[in-house]
Image (cartoon, rainbow, N blue to C red; front, top):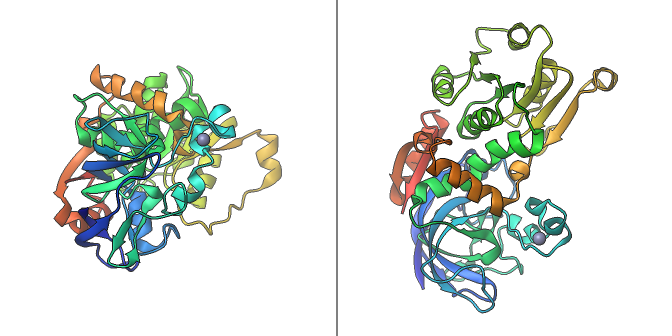
Length: 367
Ligand SMILES: [Zn+2]
Ligand SMILES: [Zn+2]
């Protein structure tokens, strides 16, 4: 069949919206009609080449939601007509990681991270050229064939754009607090980077009952937005010393937790400095792969500070995403205010321009 997708042929050049050829779903795969896709900072990292995967040409986009239109043989998780959200990492339920409480590290991701189907082949082409899909899902596409382990059925009353965001930024941010850090009521957190994911770290801290929630960002408009989601304090490092201010807020000790939602070694070092002895620094943002951390080792040990990595919110995606959508339904999680702009697929390049300009909390492409 034919589909219309946004293809990246060269780093740092606009996406080309064009007609593509799509093969039918094979064993264990489903055809999804995409209805909404979030524009995430990780997509920008693909466009600029900061991320080396997927190879080009490729369809970016890893947050999405839509309707299953066709299923291949052996598919038992969904049926045609089901509404689904896209998981950017697969979970098979059978491998070592899926059976040991770390489904976000599922062994199937080897191929999907490289932009192919779980069996290492392709379904998307332009003429004779095979097109890769970001994380095996390439959601900036009206239709795409995706492994059944990369989709999760959702209730039909959940808006597609809400489901799209929940599958990446929301579960990553909230999961970093509840699963990776395991923040307890009364504790203090510093969130460095208040974009789409950082705001959800703030929302996670509110859910966990943290009583000092400190947002740090260089942009005042981001800090203003963060206040609406439950931060108790904001700091702009352009005007204030972050460590001194955090210590003043936390009885002179430093925060119990710091979250690096930027993906930068400088921010990790700042997080270490801003936490109390015994504190934990959680690595959430994903930056360039060649950064190397340079921290004084012995002071880290003497103060017993820990670095924790958070991949996909350290979540059991299926149960956690269902819980997050339940929290949304009863009004405990504000997902509507996260969406600040909507774009038709044809205007997707404008969406990226607005992301770079810091205009959006989250922009959403509506197919
Ligand atoms: Zn994302
Ligand atoms: Zn698995």
